[in-house]
Image (tube, rainbow, N blue to C red):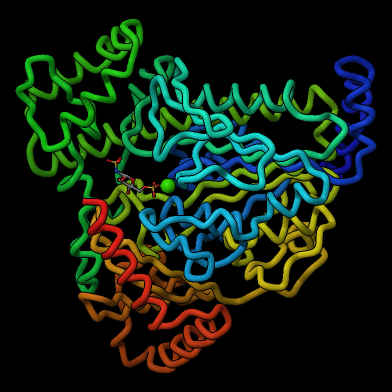
Length: 535
Ligand code: SGN
Ligand code: CA
């Protein structure tokens, strides 16, 4: 309590200092503004394990951690569908995938439907969307948009500014931050509250670091998670994956072994060559100076078996975590802008990812499964006016909840058909009532990484999953006894009543949100049709 008081005093004090100098007129008028500003930061594939505030010890993210120190960290933040574009559609609409229609990365997103940015715009907000959105069509609900086409590129990225495409020199994370800051500083109308969606491509595959971070983690050896050599016993859907670090990670495409004499021939080498070719000569020189000796060493040692698996894991971790360092720098720049311009008190800042990610758990990279590492996502929120520093939230919150929460903070009525709940009261400590179960769906099969269609329910302690379509498989986990989900206890007689109860919970969820086998069949049909058209 004492710490909180001191922090608040400091904040008030620093606000006065700021008002006395930089952008003072703007700051006064903005501080008087009753509606809070919102900066919604989303990165792509950022595992909570790779944020130091979550305490896994892999890396240091001091700026993202600032959000937790000055506000709240969510230990049980989850998505409803662990894949990019669907997650973004849920975030915008506050509705499950089977309701907003964007069930997989392939199906179209209908921008004509309601989203919270449209509602805030109507309520007088200036709105902007910058960076990755991964959905075709001109974004609706934004006064300004400057987005990456599709997945975007790490080097010399293309951006689509209000519908017009152009290539921008530089590194995508920094370019995205510059565009966001430029909008904050020079483009918005400063007498209106603002909503900024600042969405990074990193740390999405193929994990290409910025030049200045190429050597970070060079002297660190990463130990893989305890279940890195998982044999998937009792979990046939997991066993059929195509996202193994050992088995599926491409030496050139994923791990940068683009040797100049072309002896390392892999399936995806040509695709990485294209990415490499986007770099300028100066960038290529820095890149080669770092990777060429690693390539030479790799060829000389020619690791095999377990040794190769651990080598791949370490290469993966280094590059993945390096891309996060640039994301963290950008967060720092945006937080500093708020501080220096007297906007800290009245601005809600959220940091999250479109889903979680495997950093070697079960031997994997990628996401999609309802297992914890990809079902969960980092959520950190600060809003000095209402959220106490160092708040810890253990309630089951989902990305479904962002839209209603923002509307709630902005004093805008939450439409009845929104399926999420506002976590405003939960995070300020006023509410004790909260949901006790969450629902999940995943659809993108047959598809990349080979994760079967499934849906399921998670409660405080248990998780029930149903894999379907070309497999018929139920899984039940006791997360208290088996947090890594290694033992499927669906057929364990000592869990019979738990199983019955979880089936009931699942039915309740499906009824509550309006999901059904019929909808699954329709979504499957549309997917197969769309895939057919794509090839
Ligand atoms: C790309 C990646 C996949 C990844 C999907 C979905 N392959 O297709 O590894 O699972 O995106 O990711 S890549 O060769 O293009 O890198 S998502 O975050 O966009 O949903
Ligand atoms: Ca993603």
